[in-house]
Image (tube, rainbow, N blue to C red):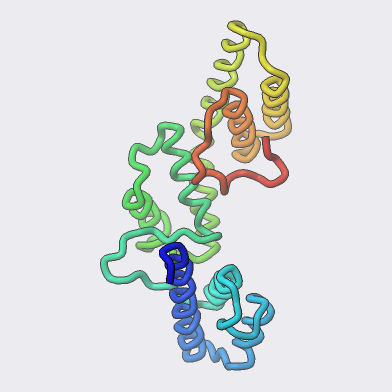
Length: 220
C-alpha cells in the first residue's frame, strides 16, 4: 500500500465497519432485514455489495442509515467534531461568525460547547436533522445582527478604492451584483451573497471552509 492510497483505504475500511454496525443495530432495534439492506445498498450506494461500492456511495448509504435511526458514537476521548453533509453548514457558520469578529474562539471545542448548549448533545454526530436545521437558523439569525454592517463596510471600502483609481469592469460587475442581491431580499442568504461579491471585488480570499455556504445559483 502506498502512502497516497493509505488515507483512502483507511476511510473505506472505516465506512464499511460503520455500515456493518448500522446494519446490525438497525436489525436488532428496527427489524432491518437482509433484503431491505441489500435494496438500500443498490438504490442508495448504486452497488449490490460494499466490496464493489465506491467511497461516495458508502457515504450516501451511511447517511441514509442515520435517517433510519443509526447513531455514530465517538471513540473514547475523541473530541473532534465530525462534519458531514448535514452539519458542515453549522461549522461554516461558526467560522463565518469568527470572520465577522463575533465569535472569539473558532475551535472545535468552542463549537462543541455551543452545540451542547443549543442541542443538548455533545457532538454534531448525534444531532438529528431537524435539530441541525434549528442550529443553522439560529446561527444565521445571530450573524444577521452583524452581517449588514459588515456588508456596508465592504461597500464603503470599495467606494473609497474607486476614488483612488478606476474600478475594473469585473469589480463594477461584482458591485452591481451585490447591490442587486440586497435589493432582492433582507435575509441571510442575500446578505451573504452580497458580502461574497464585495469580498471578491476587493480581492479578499474567502476561507475554503466557508464554501458550503455558497449557493450554486448565486456564484460571484
